[in-house]
Amino acid sequence: MTVDLDAATRFMAAHARVLDRRRFGVLLGNGDTVGLLAALDGYRNADGGYGWGLEPDLRAPESQPLAARHAFETFEEAAPLASAHAVALCDWLGSVTLPDGGLPFVLPLSSQAGTAPWFASADSTVSSLQITAAVVVAALAAARHDQAVADHPWLDRALRYCLAWCAAIEARPSAYELAFAARFLDAVHNTRPDAGSLFKRLGSFIPADGMVHVEGGTDEEFLRPLDFAPFPGTPARELFTQQVIDKDLNRLADMQEQDGGWTVDYAKISPAGVLEWRGYATVQAIQILRPNDRL
Image (cartoon, rainbow, N blue to C red):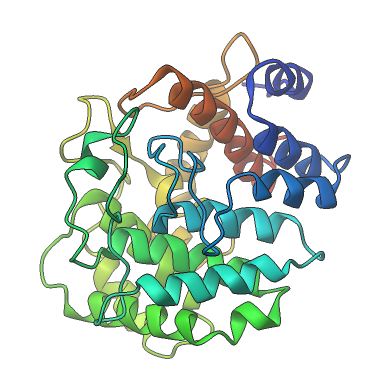
């Protein structure tokens, strides 16, 4: 159950894309935030958005809402260094936001090569809570050290969409909607007075063991306690006993493979995407395990 950071470092050097290698270095305290932002620039488009496979299962070049989530994650990790590209990304998101304030699951694709079927078949005219909340949570994290992002009108508009969605639900939503709604309410619980009551109602849809099967996924694809509450000291942690959290932390630590990296349990779409997800998953595992005192 002991995590081997040296093996993880070797895995990242051997197999991860440059962006995740840069993220990993910054995470371990020996990286370069200027180089990290430069690596992100390789996925940036002239319109201010991001594409080019920044989301590994969405490989078309044009800018996509979900890629914005990964960009904001990188902006957060580059703190305290801020980038003017973060505000430009907010501008782009505002330009593709739908009338109700939400973001579509995906925008029209110029190519479906190496792209997951759930992206290829999605309706670009309908707002998606899953995508909007995922992007908002990442943007709020970046906004902690970038006031221009915090003050951007797109962020407030998208935040209001997510709050309205959470207030309107009456039955258990899909697995990923449930998880990202929980993460969203966690992120705004100190700033939005209605978040507490909304979270209490949303939490009633999450089983005590935190195991929620992903509709349309593989038989083994579940969301788990750490997908809802990855970090200590948050309202979402109150949904689970410490025993449940400890069990899931043990599972995550045990997922380190012999080559030093982590992997994901959802559907494999393309060989490139699989390897890129492994680099991303390895960074994410360390990000979760360290504040939970597992390193």
